[in-house]
Length: 286
Image (cartoon, rainbow, N blue to C red; front, side, top):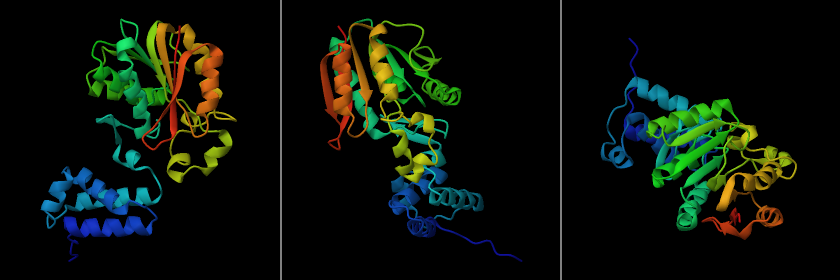
């Protein structure tokens, strides 16, 4: 009779960590902990409080499959099916870009500008993906009307699920549009557009280039193709005194600042992220 192999939390943690490490995953121990917490539905503290807890066969199967996928360089967020952004747990799939911590700077700056934004507050998130920026702004500013556009019909379905998960159907309006919606009058427009130069995509980590949607990354020859269109078009959708915030890539901030100034924006400024990199360009219209 075949004996079923028994695995404790401790053994699983050690084995998964070793497998991930041998597979070239830098944060092997951390990711093994994340997998175990996710599958067992426990906190990290609980994981270490009960190291001798035995895993069920089905739990072990799921953990092995997760580890295999991660060694193949599939992003952790896609394996888990979720990603935290602005302390919100959001569903993510390979149909949408995984929200990055540095993108939170757009939300942070939007909130900082609140006192001088024209009322009634009406915000637009261009290229919303899974809905991260729009949902964060809607949660933080209950008085605001929030719109979000997305050109991918697949990504917008993910955004719809996230909006519903937070009960924001009546406050976040999702539009399947290339960039701008059919309506204007916005106090604030924020966007994390595609900004990677086409020729640089092949040099990105496999987690990015092999799994995330290329259309959410590819910014054309110089990475500024979409950004130019947003800067050019935004004034037609902003109210007098409204602000435009755009996330940019490495080495792009000063050029984008020039685009803002050339279009007639005032108080144009470049903001650095917590890593000290020039990450967001902002400007006031009117």
